[in-house]
Amino acid sequence: MEKIVDRLQVVWGMVNHLKSVKDSSELRSAIEEVEPDKVKFLLRLGQSKPIYEAFKAIQESSSWSTLTDAQRRIVEGQIKEAVLNGVSLEDEKREQFNEVQQELEKLSRKFEDNVLDATKKFEKVIVEKKEVEGLPPTALGLAAQTAVAKGHKDATAEDGPWVITLDAPSFLPVMQHARNRSLREEVYRAYVTRASGGDLDNTPIIDQILKLRLEKAKLLGYNNYAEVSMAMKMATVDKAQELLEKLRSASWGPAVQDMEDLKNFASDQGAQEANDLSHWDINFWSERLRESKYDINEEELRPFFSLPKVMDGLFSLAKMLFQIDIEPADGLAPVWHKDVKFYHVKDSRGEPIAYFYFDPYSRPSEKRAGAWMDEVVARSRALARDGSAARLPVAHMVCNQTPPLGKKPSLMTFREVETVFHEFGHALQHMLTRQDEGLVAGIRGIEWDAVELPSQFMENWCYQRDTLLSIAKHFETGESLSEEVYQKLLAARTFRAGSLSLRQIRFASVDLELHSKYLPGGSESIYDIDRRVAERTQIIPLLPEDRFLCSFSHIFAGGYAAGYYSYKWAEVLSADAFSAFEEAGLDNDKAIKETGHRFRETILALGGGKAPLEVFVEFRGREPSPEALLRHNGLLSVAA
Image (cartoon, rainbow, N blue to C red; front, side, top):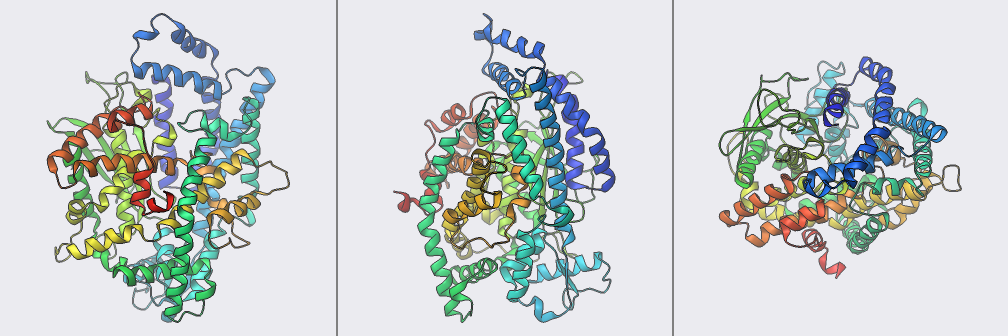
């Protein structure tokens, strides 16, 4: 089974990867042509009664008890997946199910294409210097570099012209730093209405996706698609909603206070909009308040976070925690862009255990937004070659951070640093698996709501003193970040934590609502549901024209349908896991190494070969508690 699945998975994985990082009309056409055959094959495989019956026979045989945990998990997982793939459906219903699946694949692809095209379509050329007042040098440099690429050959950071886009390295500095309020408004409105009009309108696509997902759920005997999604997860719909409500109620009061603090601060600064802050004011005044309260300017910190130094520090942390060495291996494998790096991962004896690609920079014309990790190949004993014990895992790690400008290296915001640590956490789980059963190696076979545990766990290390001070060195002078600034960064960690938590809760809640309560053609539109959810999760009402759903790729073009809550669910797990290191003593190297070894041998090594809750208990000695997450976010007293 593993060999059958792998042949397609590896090849189609490459195609999908290139679609994400090297998009072109030719590639889109090629995918459109062969995708129906790919879906047809997977349906044939997933609905194969001989394979299904074979797995059932294994489960019911006398040898069942002799199988390993991993082998039993594979059999149970394959049986569940077969049922969710429609193996029990007959004739007309099976045909209907397959048509739905084909159409869903096509619609998801179209959704993502529309988001990319709509993001590329917006560009604002600015020639007057006063219009870009407040934008930091990095943002001006990027805007000028973009202008040159768009044909404005003489553009400079100092004199322009400047081109603003909706790509994160361009969009975010405008929202955070541009003094020109009308510019912020124009860019914000463009951002929240992406892919919501004309030929690129995703509204009918969303409606059709939700309609077909509901139809699929009914064919399988479920009440709604959320129940289908939860069939392969740790949580249930009720449990997920219960967690979101607990976190929402803990976050609401602090978020209300956040808004009052923002209004008062803006008023003290003489802002005319102080008593009526709009969405395009929030990030701007938040940055000013953060700078005032903690005496931290994120842009002034950029020179301390150069990409090469951050990666060196990250690799040193991985060596200390997990006893691995990571070395450049450029030239050992072909790459799709000159900026892509290739790395070799070795164990403490110098034996190779994995490889990974790193594609760090934003390329708006061909690369989709966001950051992600994906597998190239998984560890596998069955697919080993040349006498080796197992095929070694290979991963992709992709980010969209600010590229180098001129002779300067990529200088990162602290949020970009957190993102690199996050994606590296995913890569570690894929690469450090000791699981030889390929179908449950690395991130495979892990319930989706546990898969964010290692990634969010790694983010915590950005705030650990020794780690942060090891990566924060001025790229020109080599000067270290001062202890004083470190303490300010630490204090600022809980700044507006209630508001940021509510934002994620809104996304997770609207996802669950759409997949459990939305009725296509009913009295409530998708935007009615979004507004209803926003009333309980946003302090400022949504703009009437807000169409965030039209670019919500996670749930309409990714794997997070009725699963976005997984970020909060796994945040509970990851914060609790990190608290084991806090309890051991973050300044106690011996205890940290011992705890890191235990984390590697459980969370990172066991893959999907054991139930995530069992793995967590094996590491932590007990079931997870949300206390650590609320404490890290400064919300514990509110929830108590």
